[in-house]
Length: 233
View 1: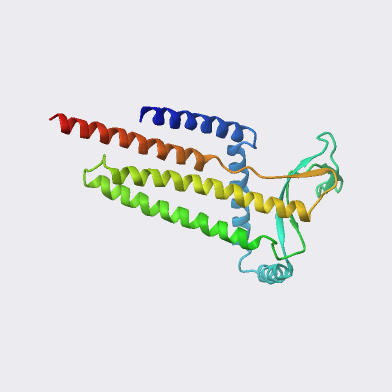
View 2 (view 1 turned 60 degrees about the vertical axis):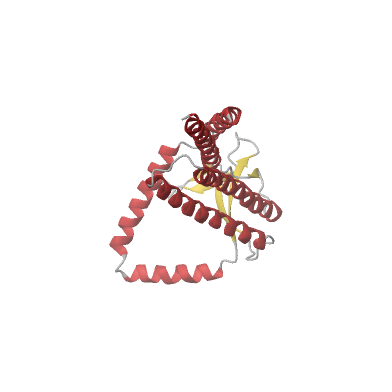
């Protein structure tokens, strides 16, 4: 029993380290949140001001018409083949001059509405949703059991173990979804001066899954100790 707890504890530490490395290698979370919040606030303020204007209604109609014409799109994670080269340009409306640009994330229209692995993607999404639903049900049942005072029992061990397994399933499914989308993008898009990369999945479900499995082993140890004390008495 103790060997399993030590093993799960070691896996948890490894997962935390890998998660920290993954977060440090991406754009700073705080800055991203600040940029998104400011952009969203400015957009909401502008829309609230223009909501009752004829221009707003005209823009809505144009947006609906444009959406109907879109047959398929993908968000690409790009890495330049040469970091020193700014191969693209964007217009600076303040000065009217073109500014050098090096892209990292872009949204492109692929020109096809049918995903070749759409059935697999839909299946994975269903599995992901069912896993989350099952976890919520188990969590509610686990909390209800704790209220009765019966903590260290086999039922709670099974609930914790299954909650950990479900987290690991969602982690695996998330990677599978990324792989399906990446395979489709690689087969449909190739950009000059850039390489299309596969996005990384958050390591949080992996860490949560190991934590729940660790708790399940701790509960099992507690139950065994409780049974030994009752037997001695």
